[in-house]
Image 1 (cartoon, rainbow, N blue to C red):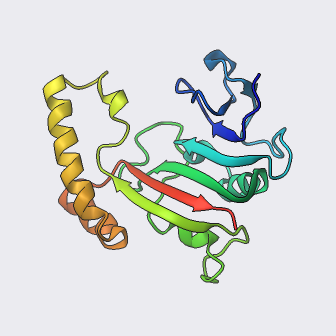
Image 2 (image 1 turned 135 degrees about the vertical axis):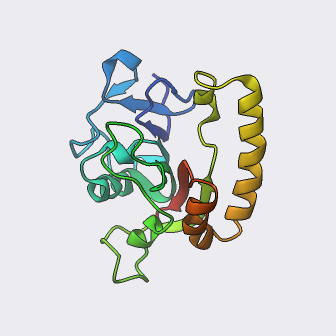
Amino acid sequence: MPVTRKLNLGSGNYPLADHLNVDGDFRVRPEVICDLDRRPYPFSDGAFTRIFASHVLEHLRDPFAAMAEWHRLLAPGGELHVKVPHFSRGFTHPDHKRSFDVSFPLYFDERMPPWYVGTPFKLKRLRLHWNAQPYLKRYVASPVSRGVASALGFAIDTVANLHPMLFSRLFTFWVGGFEEVEVVFERP
């Protein structure tokens, strides 16, 4: 197995070629089988420069403990790229234990004592996505429907990401909410 400093947690059926793919389900054939609810993971402190976790955190029992573990695994200056369901549509999957809002990064900002949980991350980027995971839509929507949703999603995302804190709530009523919150953190 080639040495990599990138980790794809909860890789499922979507492994990344340049990452070490980790999942708890042996059927998806990850390089490492690991129950992401059981810590510590079988990796050294600071072993990775990048961790990618797409639609994983909402399935775990304790998201703050998982974030602390991911912090442990990242080298200083490393990037944590997380995608989670937005609260407006987060409970559409029967295994989702929670959903998230754009306020999620506040819990990792030391300057926000009312929310801070003790695991420091610096927010690099925050985005809302109205039409997330388009690769899954091919199973349930026609090509025309997917095209319209893609164009509409681009327009909604462009406006919403001008001020995600404002539009996260407002667009929940105007456009039916968002499918995803995407956050990129840096480990200080």
